[in-house]
Image (tube, rainbow over all chains, first blue to last red; front, side, top):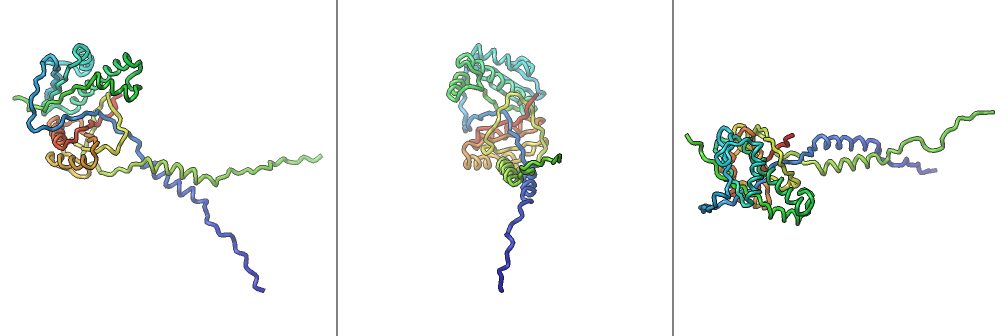
Length: 169
Length: 137
């Protein structure tokens, strides 16, 4: 008499699941930015209260000065920005101990500072690449970790940042 | 003779049961790679261009300092005076000793302010910096 009523199978409708996850997917697609930061690396010298002056032989220094209008002077001679790289490469080859003293004035435009810094970095990059090819037979960006250490030791980046001075006059 | 239309015995539909799984996989990929922007940039700046650029793979090491056209300095979410930088940079360096300070400076800025910021960073011993620049073609 009391027949058990046959229950319909219980089911959660899953057909819209794909739509929901598509919606989420679109949200993350739109918000994702896969941009890698690029820039010029630099390590600042540590802060010392009373900086002691270290005398360096003047032969070992290349004085690089950028004035307030953006003229670049290498050892008091005016030089165009693209000429800095070949000039610095030639000078480091002649004297591996060369220190580049990079000085600006407070009114130097930042983009000129960066383009000169870029030239210095390019010069070091080219020197390191050359060294790597000679010693290891591979370009510098394919060198192994220990080879990179060796390259860095052989050609250290000697850029000294001098504090900018107030423009005269 | 009768010509009977041949009907394939196999199922004609494409199985869609695994569709959600595929979408979820994509979803999870994008969820993991997404870095939601944490700060609003309140200063206006255009980055300079350079060639000898290095890529920074590890974004977690980065901390940004913005310097805008009007020489205002922003760290995290606030505009700060120059002499407040060393304290903040010091705290940041305490939390993360390998921190790289990424300087995003407008290309029209003067070196005076850039140097002041660098002096503050030296004082805080946050010595690894990176001048953010765009690729020059």
